[in-house]
Length: 98
Image 1 (spheres, one colour):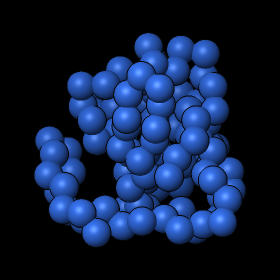
Image 2 (tube, helix red, strand yellow; image 1 turned 135 degrees about the horizontal axis):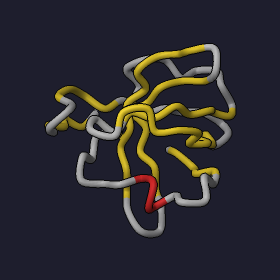
Image 3 (cartoon, one colour; image 1 turned 90 degrees about the horizontal axis):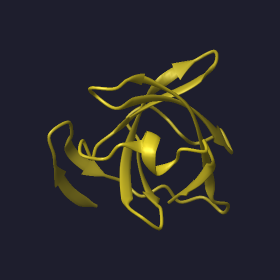
Image 4 (tube, rainbow, N blue to C red; image 1 turned 90 degrees about the vertical axis):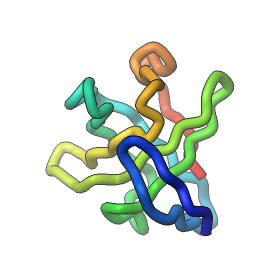
């Protein structure tokens, strides 16, 4: 496990070991200032609040923490406060997380 310190997050990042990749669909930005997003995951199992996912994108690498679950999806918070996901994923495309 790696120790990470950031503006929004202090703690340990644990590895999510699953036989299949995790796909994240960013649905809506809920809170611009704290970069909280409503997302949908596939597969949905094994992802609990507090889990931190590393998303590799050709332009940037993004860490996001799963905050909780709502009926419409799950909420995540980006741990890289300088990243503007709306410009990176303007087409609302699926992304792959480790």
